[in-house]
Image 1 (cartoon, helix red, strand yellow):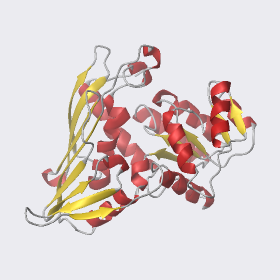
Image 2 (image 1 turned 30 degrees about the vertical axis):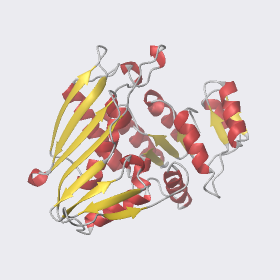
Image 3 (image 1 turned 180 degrees about the horizontal axis):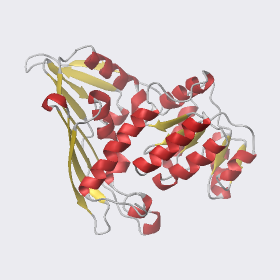
Image 4 (image 1 turned 90 degrees about the horizontal axis):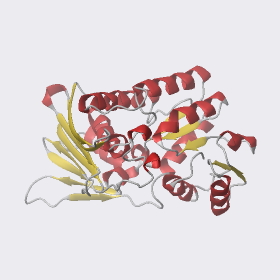
Length: 323
């Protein structure tokens, strides 16, 4: 594992639920932090630099959990060594970075997957199966939101939420989830409409995206750092609606709603941990099978997602240094 922040702890805790997974090496910019993490989770090798992580025992795959701005650099570092990579979302800051990373993976024949863990959760997999089987008729519309109250840090140079130099903003941090869900259900949009409220330095903090599809179908995707939202998703069909329980990106259930006087059809999928174990298990299965990318969340899927995200940013006027 490279990068040992909050999400890395969640991932490491979930690995404990996989009997055939073992955390071998961890890397941080701080030797002290790396050693503390390794001690907590039983990793035999701790490195105070990302490159030195590979000076220890051989690893079968790497999970990258650093801030957005280092995803490209660290993914390429691993790919150059022929090491399969699971890189936290967003895979890159923009479509150009994602293109470069995917080209490197395919050129070297090395496995790469964007860590969109929601794609592998049992409740969301089953909900998609219900929709594809016509369980709510023909899908017409989708609405999904994700919001929490973000507090700017005093050490702004390390503020990944609000500092544009670190890829700050609601869209890439949490807005990616509603937009991913829209892609999961509808595919590629025909038109993209977006508005946003931005800080004085240019980070988006309140962002509304409407994606338009064939036949006038719409997906309304909202993300905000201004306050807590329900974080739920509703998919409307001609014969019913499917409500993914909040928080939808880590859902453990969904309900089908068919009429005012018809009881909801509730479906629950409990699991241990946070839910990262499912994407970890998927990567392990793929690597063992000798695959170079996931059939469930492919590199082409990531390209489409980042094409949409990059166009949204262009529409709302959010740019990052170097663009």
